[in-house]
Length: 256
Image (tube, rainbow, N blue to C red; front, side):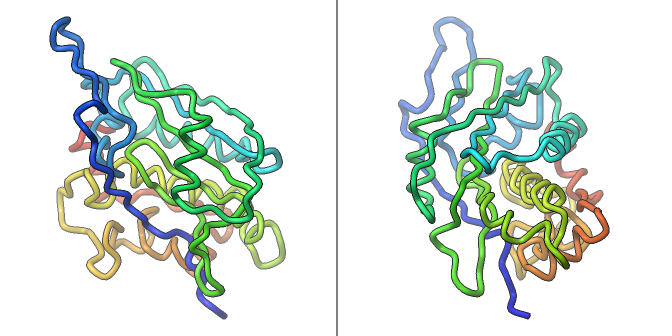
């Protein structure tokens, strides 16, 4: 069986210019955090209630490629269990016109976000953008497929078309289980896991697979990137969970 790489960690190290944040020093209001920072840079902002008391998640999709209700419910539950947002977490859904691509580069995805994104950070509400696409990653090869990429501090993409191709058939995982695993794994990187903006309380980063947990049953384990690995992780309707080390990291950075 050929190895299929399910998730490719691509960290876009965008440097925020001075005008990316609005200084409100004259009116005692906190500066507005940019939505164009590196992956993991807003981990504490997402996890804690130090500045942002609420969160809005914008799910943007092409017709026919919307996430399932089960996945949305699983995401809501995951966040309510892990982030401190006393004024609530809201999930919105927006359908957009198909861009017409069969595959997408990160530059293509950023252009779509720049065109369609509605919600941005305010003084006390943090905004997350998740895009569900009708095509595949331009980086795919015959032996390597990408299902999702976290590319900014509040943004990630899910290649929903590829998820459809790898699920809901004989010997393939349930689509919602696979979809949930990809979405939560990507969100884990926005939360700074592993060693990606959230400091480790104990050294549990996999040295052979950086920015992933070394616990094989953890949601952030590297095997979620391989065909055989993810099939095992979601077999029997089991969606991988964060292990105690990852949870301890999040709690130390303002999470639950």
